[in-house]
Length: 291
Image 1 (cartoon, rainbow, N blue to C red):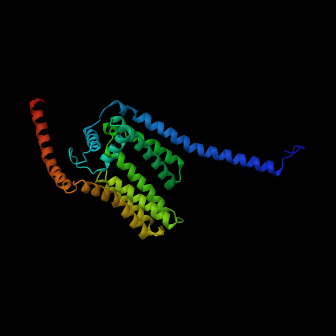
Image 2: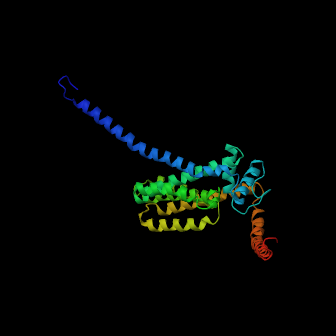
Image 3: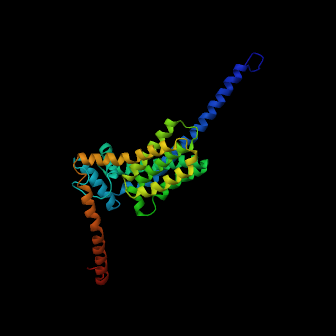
C-alpha cells in the first residue's frame, strides 16, 4: 500500500500470489486428507485380524513355507504347496523385515489392501473423471474384502488383486494418453506387464482373467494407441519376466525339475482326497458323527 491507501501493482501481485498459494494448499490437502482417512479406515476394519494367530490352513501353510525359506529351505523342499512362488516370497519378505510373526503378515496385508484402494481410486478418477466414484470404490473395497471368514485371512486373492489393478492402471496410462512419448508409453506397458506377471506368480488361474481384460482394453483402444506393436511387445516381455525369474531361481536351487512332477502328483491326489472326505462325511452321517 502507498501512503494514500491505494494498492500498487506489486502489492496486488503479492496478494494474488498468496491467494493462489493458499488455494493450491487447500487443493493438495484434500487428497492427502482422504488418503490419511483411508489408511485409518483400513486399519480399523482389519484390526481384529491381529487378535487371531491364523484364520485358515492356507494362511498358516504360507507362513510355514516362508519361515522355512528364511531358514534356508526354499519352497517345495521341506513343505509342499502347489501354488506358485509369489505368495511365499511376499510373506518371507514381510517376515524377514518385520520379524517372524503373524503380526508381520497382518501388516503386509493391511498395506496391500490400502494400496489396492488407492489404485482403485486412481483408476476410477482416470476412467470416469469422477472423484466421488473413486472415493466410493476406495472406501468400499476394504469393507468388501471382509465378507465372510475368508476375508479376514491373508490369502492369495488380496495380493493378486493388487497386482492386477496396478497393472490395469499402468496399462490405462500407457494406452489412453495420445500425447505420451514413445518412451513413456513403453515404460508404462512394461510396468503393466510386470504387475500382471507378478499376479500370475501368486496364483496361476489369474492368467485367464488378466488376459481377458487386457485383451479388451487393447482391442478397444487399439486404433488410438500410437505405438501399438511396441506396447504389445513390452507388455508381453513384462508379463513373462516374473515367471522367468521364479523358474531361474528354482532352477539354480535345483528344484525346477522336481516341482512339476511333485505338483502333478499332488493334483492327481486331489480327487482321491475329495473322495475320502465324502466317504468320511457319509460315515459320520450314518453314525451320528461317531465315525
